[in-house]
Image 1 (cartoon, rainbow, N blue to C red):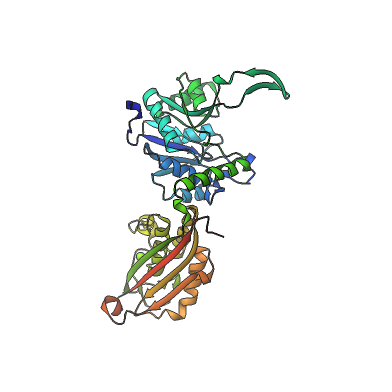
Image 2 (tube, helix red, strand yellow):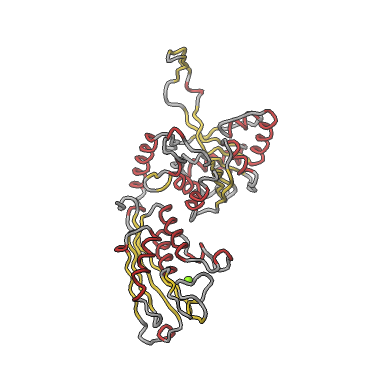
Length: 402
Ligand code: MG
């Protein structure tokens, strides 16, 4: 194994320009937000990049219109991510992202190439590390004809031609210099390799894969689905079974605090103490959902050290959690929860609480179970010092969703 092939630890930033719309796809919106086997195309692309050990961080360039949705679907990635504002062209978007890169290498990758493999990323970056650049590309397999108006002028020796894919990997400083050169001459390019060539840097190709297709049309999406299904079958189909989740929370009762449970204000002169609205029932439900999908828990998502969440309405947080579950590719099947409290009486509000949970999660009320029990006078809960809640849930992968 040569030095260039030795695992270096994370020394590269992946840049993913995702500010375009993909008009040939005909989705009427950014095509990379469309589902590929139940998960947005972009989410699958980012997960593939995050699986590469060389990638320290991912920067996604987005339009103002898509920022909220893309920010949500980035969540829970195995690598830190940042969102920057994209430009009118790919060149502008990548430039905006490049400004904040502090690592030595960059790997610019198309948002619409979700089938990239760890091996191809490793080859591109190894070449960039050793030689300054590594453009993932494939030899052209078809016989090449030069034509005019559909009439062949000549057959071109295809041995000379490779099709450029992504990631296009290089030293960050070289790409910055290439941008400066392009600015000086007004050069516009459709990929980073062209910018490097234009600036006089030697550009090296490394072999990609025929499966690393760019989803441009609906037909491409169907091809990508077939490839992905075959891979999932090969990989033991880890994401084909329903997953359960469990959550627990407790908050102390305090005078002068609102008593909010299941998003319902009980209108009492005592309530639950905490940084947010202290809705222990919804907190247990959120942790069950997040746990089922393998996402970080609410302590990580909405830390109680963050002023943004002071007094937060937990119903809004639950809506956001439900969105993250969907962004991770799951559908919420059902939720079942138990509140443990000596006081207040839950029954008068139970129907409204159940309806709130169902609505925030986008599921029917008969998919939400809610029970309440006392602690039979035992311990602190039995003494009426707090309100606890347990919740379980089931989330469904795409194959099981209706
Ligand atoms: Mg809590």
